[in-house]
Image (cartoon, rainbow, N blue to C red; front, side, top):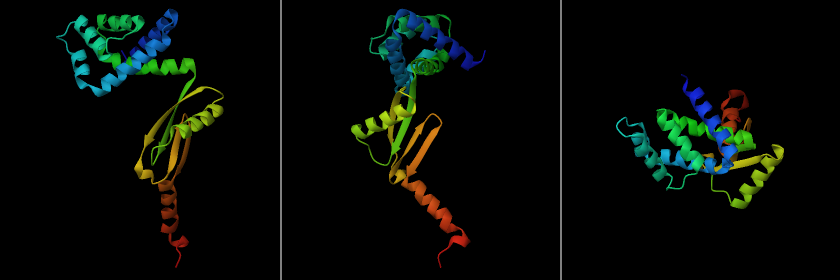
Length: 185
């Protein structure tokens, strides 16, 4: 069976189950923490994929990775995944759930890349402007720093890309003055 289809089905089922239990936000937080644990600790993934460890030990490991604070809905979901031997798809399910949650709650992701760190006040203003563009949907702004931009910023949200970086402007000037017709002699 197709990996994406399995992940989407399980993620949608988890979203429906969490909504029915009134634990959507708690499950969303648990999912994001487990995604972070996957990225930080390779041993979590290795132990989860191990055919030697029983399902109870794997579930205990995942609880430990989440500091023992797991919503009942997400705990039952993990139990279901392990019972059906779908742990190799769990990472995909988690990412699919984040997408399902964001679609259902109208959350839009935006990335602001700057040459130097931007203040919280400026980031909030940018998020508010992006929220106006999306007609009051929530905007989750991620900030990154890339010194190669030299100055300015790059803003990316859905199908919008605003590249106001100094490195881009310098590249345009290089290309323009690189042509023989535009050379200043």
